[in-house]
Length: 116
Image 1 (tube, rainbow, N blue to C red):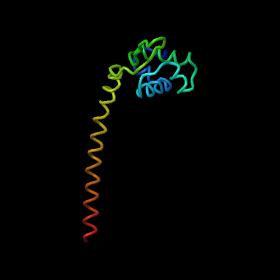
Image 2: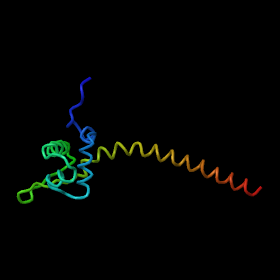
Image 3: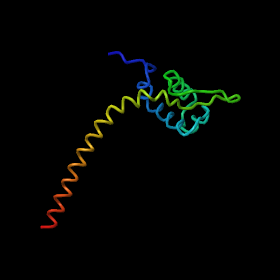
Image 4: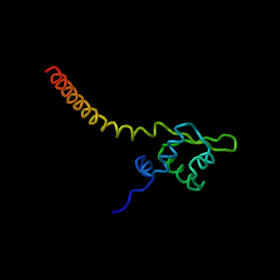
């Protein structure tokens, strides 16, 4: 079975742990490549390659600042991931509500047992 191209979509892009680390770092604020290299202790070619993928799928934007290029997270690029995860949030919310009902019943039973 052939693997999907890495740059096909945001899900493939964030499947790589180093790219998620880069996104986490950029969530703290925009940074030039050399700062990302230093923070993550990776080689510059490796970081540049990951940034290229992240830019191609729209998760990262870049702008020139003097002689440097600085990168920042593009929040709109994360929307497909947010939308997908939100589908599962409903399921978890329903399960937590059901758990709350069970816990409340246990508390009431325990209170009744203490009274008798």
